[in-house]
Structure formats: C-alpha cells, structure tokens
Image (tube, rainbow, N blue to C red):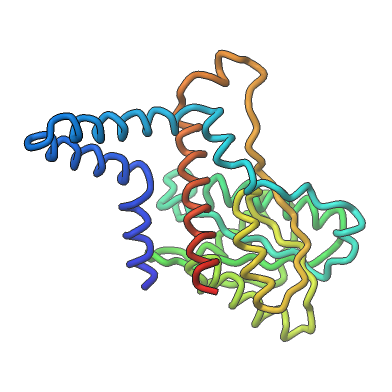
Length: 247
C-alpha cells in the first residue's frame, strides 16, 4: 500500500496531475474543441499560478499555524524527536547517501533546541526506496555537523505514520510521553495528529517557515522554488484529508 499511495499521489498532484489533465484536454479537443482547449489552457495556467510566490504562500496559510516553541514549553518536554525529510542519494562529495535540505533544516533546529535544553534526541527515518536508512544519516549529521548527541535512532519508518509508531515503541520503553516534535512548519499539523494518536503529549517545534523577499519584483515573479512550495502544500493538504477520512 505504501507504493500505491505514493504512485496515486504522484499522478494526482503537480506537476504530473496538471500535465496529464492538459494532455487529456488536447485529446478531448479532437471531438470537443472548445471544451478540450479550455481544459488544456486551465492546466497550463494552473502550473503557472503554482509557480507564483503569493499563490504558494496562500496554499501554505493554515498549515504553518504553530508558533516557534517557547522556552517554557521546551522545559516541559522529555525528549526531542526530529522527523526525516528526505535523502540526498549517492552524494558524490560525501561518497554515500546523506540528508537533504529539509532534513538538514530540521536537524539544525533540533540540535539548537538540545543546546538550549539538554534534552535527548531521537531521529527517525527509514529507507523506503533502498539505500542507507535516513535515521543513520541524521544521527551522523547531528553529531558531526551540528555538535549534538543522538540517543535513539529509528531506521524502519517509511512515512510519518510509521515515524510515530516506531518512535513510540522506543520512547515509551523509557517511560517518556512528552516530546518536542521537530519538523517543517507545514508538515507539523499532520505529524502532531499521528504522534498524539500514539499517546504522546506533543509540543510543536516548527522550523522552515515559508517567508518571502522584501523585493516586490522577486515576490511576484514565477519561480521554481515557489512551485516547489506549492507542491509541498498541496501534498500536505491531500495527506491531511486522507488522514481525517481514515479516522
């Protein structure tokens, strides 16, 4: 089911979803010219709209609804849990698989919180497509690059639900139930719900908020980064919808 979910989401979400919709419109235009061309044009305009920073920010609005963790909240936590966000496969400069940008951002913030609090860290992430488990690469980055210390390494999880389930097994064995959960701000609404289902009291520790340039020109021009942000937002919204329907 993991691979089925990934395939279906890849076909529905951009870029594949709008492209397939546009191709269907072109095929339909042979018999219904106005309707088919209208669908194809809407698909193209949709791709353009998703590449605009104001659209990306609007899609993220409501997902990034948790403020940065406060000192008094951090003081209540018993552990810091950092969720993986993807791997940089076969990195030539390191000679192995290592963590990519979303994961690095989360690890940096998790190590920063550890320095502020002295709390132990759990990192979680498997290898759903083969290669080095993400948890191992996360531990290496925390300790080598950010000077932190990882106490627990979870290496089997393929998605956020499994991050929560496998982390629960490790932490509850030590009697821990209150965690500072570190992930990208847009990812936390879904992650918090899954960890709360495992019986944790979750103290949100978001990082990587969506921000924009002070330059009006840069803010209004289409960009690949804005398109990526829009895709992340739509992926999370679809995930939240499926998660709520499955309750």
